[in-house]
Amino acid sequence: MNKYLEALIIKSEKTINMKIVIVEEKPLISKMLYGFISDLGYEVLCFNSVSDFNKSRSRGSGPVDLIFIDPEMPKGQGLGIIKEIHELNLEADVIIISDGNNMIDPRQAINNGVYSYLNKPVRLAELELLITRVQEKRSRKAWQPD
Image (cartoon, rainbow, N blue to C red; front, side, top):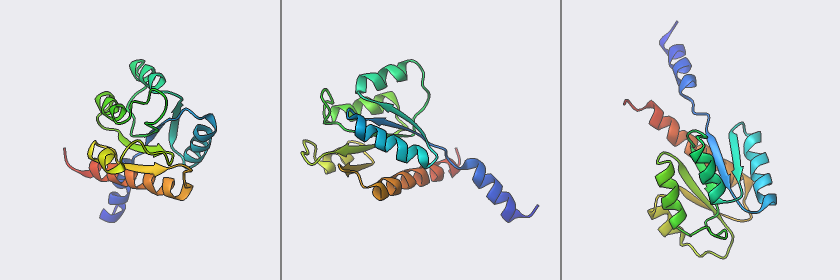
C-alpha cells in the first residue's frame, strides 16, 4: 500500500464524529436545531434546561464535544452557566445562541471560554460553518502527538 493511501486511511480513522448537545428552552428552536444538526450526521441530544443537562451528565451520558446553549434562559445564570459547563466537561466547545436582547457581551463570553456566538434567528449556513470549524479544530487536536 502506498504512503498516500495509508495516510488517507489513518486520517479517516481520526475523523471526529462529534456528540452535540443543545440546551434550549423553546421547543420550536430546539426541534429545528436538532433536525438540522442530526441531518448533517452528528449525534445530537436536546435538553430544555441546564438542570436536565446536568442530570444527564450525572447519569454518565458520556463525553460531549460541542454544546449550544442560550445562557439567557430562565435560571440560565448568564456567564456563570459557561463556567459550570466547563467544570462538567472541560473538553466541550461552547457556542452561545442568544436573541437580540443581549444580557451577555459576546467578547466577554469568548474571554470566558465560549468558542463562538450566534444570534437568533439562527442562520443555518452559519450554524453549519461553526460546527465544521469546531470539528476541524478537534480533528487537528486528535492529530497532535500525545
